Length: 354
Image 1 (tube, rainbow, N blue to C red):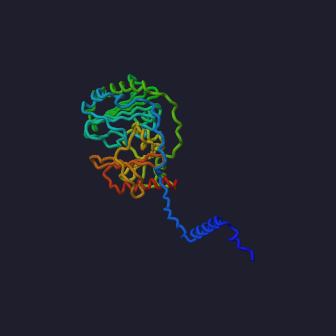
Image 2: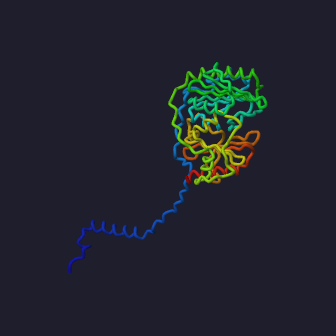
Image 3: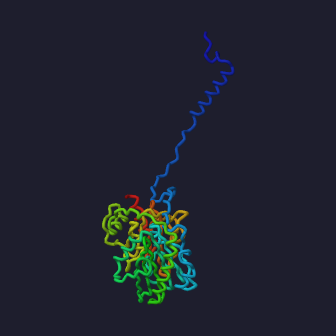
């Protein structure tokens, strides 16, 4: 009888073969591994891993508000108690244009979305310096009724005071630079305009020393503002009678900057919302314009946001990122957070569906 194959193996090989068989049998008897359930991936309009776009290049590198207008110069208009307010809110579009926005007030913060100084409980000064001056001048010129254009400051300028509101403003075109100065809460009159002229002249000298001329950016064609408002609320762009373009009782550099950056600025009931394309740099570490308040977690479809401290009227600015865009929502009166968050969720949803 022929010996079995196992008996032909050496003792060492036989032991190795038996160990292999035992190990294989043990693996076969192990229970199968059940993969853990993978949670559904919910798309987010603001992926946390996506870097923010780089901040825009300033047309006035190295120039800050305190260098542009020294405390002594500001005190000549507002007094010694005036302090500089951080750039925020309505200043986003100004910075997106490469400009510089500065606001000083005597006591208490102004509302972070004041596009036009119309009223304040204490004196305030607003200064905006921008390149691409001809574009800003054309918008200013077309929105005013001025017939007299003196040239003793810059190339030309226009000034006006509204005594009932205690507001004065002066807008100057000087080469390719546009400067806007506005005060509120001071006694309007010839003396006030004379102080504004002196202030504007000193600002021009400093700004010219820092201005880096550049080509005017290409301006993409954009739908009318009403259609932009509807597009922001619905991927279909369906007209909405409750939503309309945001308007003010005057023309300012801020309003022109909103338009030149192709921003969307609209009212919906008592709420105002604004979207500035490519301006999510505000939420980056090197931004010249910072969110106006403390961070608050996502809720009800609204992404993580920043909310400013409510002012004396209960108004509050909410800022958040949608892709590369900056979005701000504020109220003209005190409005519930739930209504505001519902609008925020609508804007995020429409952007994700577009």
